[in-house]
Length: 175
Image 1 (tube, helix red, strand yellow):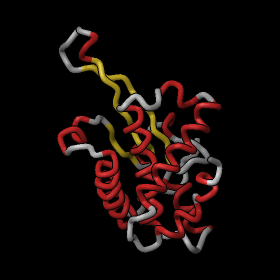
Image 2 (tube, one colour):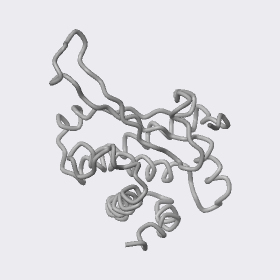
Image 3 (cartoon, one colour):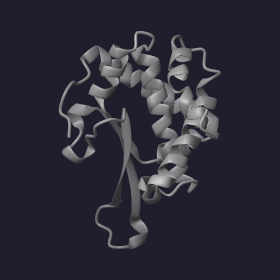
Image 4 (cartoon, rainbow, N blue to C red):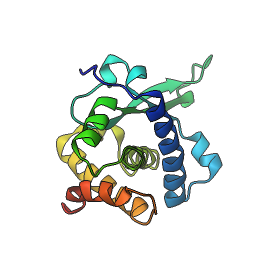
């Protein structure tokens, strides 16, 4: 899997800001309280934090699910799933570099909102995580998630978001 480019410290600040905004937008859209949001188990990682299996060629990010269990318990009821949003720094930076109209911050917001929508859908059992990698289910899920992401962000007055939505328009038109 690719090693490549990593976000600079100023770009990492944009990642942090994009994650904060994305969490707010997604929780507002799905009407998730702050308490419910805090119970969601996920993390966002960038290239320097990813292990080998979390690095992929092509996509800007992926969600990886892991099984966990509370420490010092033997009961199956203590098991849970947590997710890692794996940002692919090099792919994101290359896309912004190759497309003069894309700005990093709104592009990151779109990517993170998109991945958080997946996580919410998994948590609400609107999509089963294990089925999300089956080709026919994956494409249908991607179209649904891009549609929801579009709904969340199309009204967001964020400079440069219009260009990001135009970039992703092909996904919405597949419906």
